[in-house]
Image (cartoon, rainbow, N blue to C red; front, top):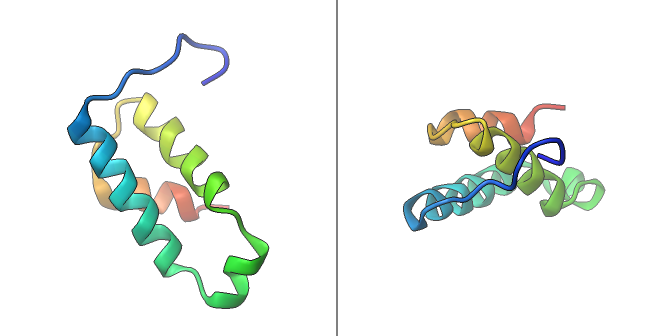
Amino acid sequence: MTDQEPANFDLKTVALMREALDDAWGCLPHQQRANSSRSLLAERILKEAAKGERDRERLIDAALAA
């Protein structure tokens, strides 16, 4: 997102991204949560949403990919 103009999201999209973040965090085993950060997951979701992605499952997949 740093190479582009800042993304603007409507309230529906923000709610979708928040749900995707909560779901992605919930998918991580407790030990992996200790080694991960919610902000890293959120960053991945934001990047995909900035590209136009609005599918919840794909946002979750993007957050967990790494």
